[in-house]
Amino acid sequence: MCGICGELRLDGRPADLAAIARMTATLVRRGPDHGGSYSDGPLGFGHRRLAVIDLSHRSNQPLVDQELGLALVFNGTLYNYKALRSELAALGYHFFSDGDSEVILKAWQAWGEDCPTRLQGMFAFALWDMRRQVLFLARDRLGIKPLYWSADGHRFRFASSTQALIAGGGVDAAIDAVALHHLLTLHAVVPAPRTVLAGVRKLEPGHSLRLGPAGEPVVRPYWRLTATRPEPDLEEPEWLEAIHTSLREAVRRRSEVADVPVGVLLSGGLDSSLLVALLAEAGVSDLRTFSVGFEDTPEEAGSEFQYSDQVVARYGTRHRKFHVRNAEVLPRLPEAVDAMTEPMFGQDAIGFYLLAEQVSREIKVVQSGQGADEVFAGYFWYLRMQTDTSASALERFRRHYFDRDHAEYLRLVSPEYGGEDYTSATIAERLAEPGADTFMDAVLRLDVTTLIVDDPVKRVDNMTMAWGLEARVPFLDQNLVELAARCPPALKLKQGGKYPLKALARGLLPDAVIDRPKGYFPMPALKYVRGPFLEFMRETLCSRPCRERGLYRRDYVDRLLAAPDLYHTRIQGNKLWHLAVLELWLQRQVDGRG
Image (tube, rainbow, N blue to C red):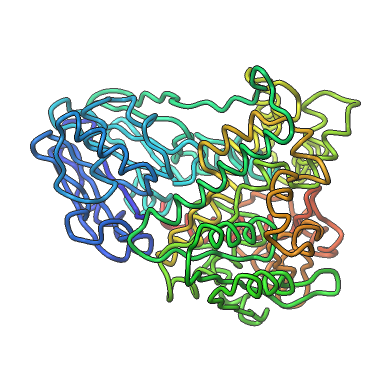
């Protein structure tokens, strides 16, 4: 796992190596083990490495193959790299390292722009073909690894973070009005290619980008998720067996493909608990598990230790449990915001940030349960959408998911950011895309391919990589996701959702863990805002930079500040926290840096 960045000049000048050095410096926490750079005329690369596979210097990057005339910077892990290496060796290619990065170089030489279709895992990479003078970028199918870019008439730059692009200089940091509408409507999700900054774009998951020294970026998809029934359809026992087999394989591969130990972030929920059970079933010994909890509020418990402790007791894991007091959380909030490549509203961001800090002191790689709820329909709003048959697809989705309808959005933002109902138009278009048999198939496909990418998946990447900790997400294994997308929604929604996982877990986990109400990574102080947390948000939203920015209408802000606990979204987010974290992110990431 690593941080990557680079530049291709489009005006005939050599790459700006000073800018690349500044960009690379912002990525040190993503890759604390090694730093390197490479340049070839108009092209410059920067890289920071977290050594997980082939710990030797041979896999340090940028990786250059002079014989083939190729250079690479790569962030991620390929779980099928050994099989690909054997296939490429049979074609006559020889290797100078034992890692997964070099496989991409040979795959490009062998298969060209189709090479991403051969890669299984999480990845974002940039490859420079010296002879063709072509820059090629690709991002994994589920967007697990980030890849941002910016371009003007003189240069094209890319990086693992917006912070790196801003550090390079010359980025248009004006707010993108369309992206802002998405951000404040879809729980901080801004579907690719947009970001909240007008001058920064992100490569869509499952897409590649090709650029020559004088051309425009050419973006094309190499993967689409289909949510249609197979012919003939399977019976329930066949579906369950197929899903169980696929998940076991996904967990096993993410444990074995590493030259360092792999642990588990154990929340106490079904998903992470099931990872522990499957790893134990696969014979993994000395399994390391980690949990974090926070202070309770009258409305909500701050930890799930009562459940994670049962899993630890059953499987005898080597467990570390961290309890964080609210007094410790508030001073660390700005740090967590600094680690966000884009604003994030999920209250668990600070939880993952503080947990990753502790875990990274003991281990380099963990498995995490993100993706299970989206892939297997675990959230409460799915059932509400399924039973709400009285309206259009857009309306069924909107009234159970949108944080704000368009009318409220217009009451929130200043007139210059008003505009049209961009989010409704985007969601309607995506729900209507072909390749989904039913409304719920379309909803789950949208969540897996779009919404999850810019909410829990990005959150886990940013918060763990801020501490040089690699998080692997087996529930987003390509083969498992493709299989689950074809599974009938009714089967996934059975017994309140995630029925296939509950069926698999029965007998492996305590019934109390399987049958408990659906929980969320708890951080109650950011959901029920009061005391010092309320004062912190008040200071942020009443600050001079916030007032001068003029993004929010003051009457809307004042109404939320007067009664923050009365204003929650349909999916239980605190609206005041949304405004505060967006403003804090803009102050810390953009003001004075663009």
